[in-house]
Image (cartoon, rainbow over all chains, first blue to last red; front, side, top):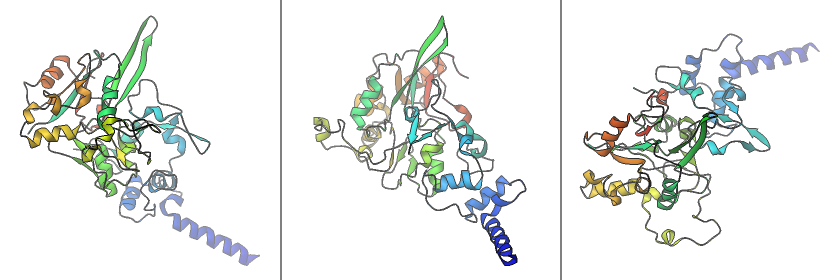
Length: 123
Length: 228
């Protein structure tokens, strides 16, 4: 019994270590996490694609911890939203409703001088 | 060096979609991956209501977020040339979709391998059978495609030393800008203060969309609410 308990505790500890920053109870330092991802110190995969298991969602969901509803908010884009691909929504993928993402959510982290790789407000 | 921009007057546009059709014919964009789209929506409250038409294509930004994403991913498939035109190299593109996620205007279209003809299941149109498409017009499955400012026409002007005729001569002007029945679209060199496009932007106070992203688009809009 003691041996089983010890093994279970060891497994939990190992899992926590392998998950790195995510498993820590203290608040995540986003800047350090972003730098670690870029330096290849956090395993987020090498598959550059938008699939759920791809690098993009590994970073945003698994490593940073953003929930689906944090980005995918609307069934469809508002009528006045000026976005070329807005007709893609409402969209159903594998029987599951996929909600649209408004890009304004990305500006905060992805502007120059902020934590993530800069795509916006480049000098 | 000339820098080419487009101005679209939404006060003149009435949503006929001639520009959308012209783009489809000129560039054979993949079905379901349009390069030029008409956004149509209502605004206001009865009785003060309006129907708005905003045609959208690639903004050819000064600081393209699509290029930043592509470069960060290491593919370097997107470039911005000396004339300000943002182009995708289909041979380098892996179809990862990072550009599509970062573009604030939703421009890059992942074609998903559905490369087809203008009328899927039907015969090829005579135009498609001509087989004289420029490399930039030829599509490749599982890559991203988007408006090129009709670079295949502009580069002919550059090669012929007729850059000053871009936006004036039909052969050297993007096709969508040629067909507008209300002349709501003007294309030209913004570095020339006397060009029609410079004059129009100044006189009508044309502005760029979604300036908060800081991508500095090269497509200007005359909006009925004015600049913001």
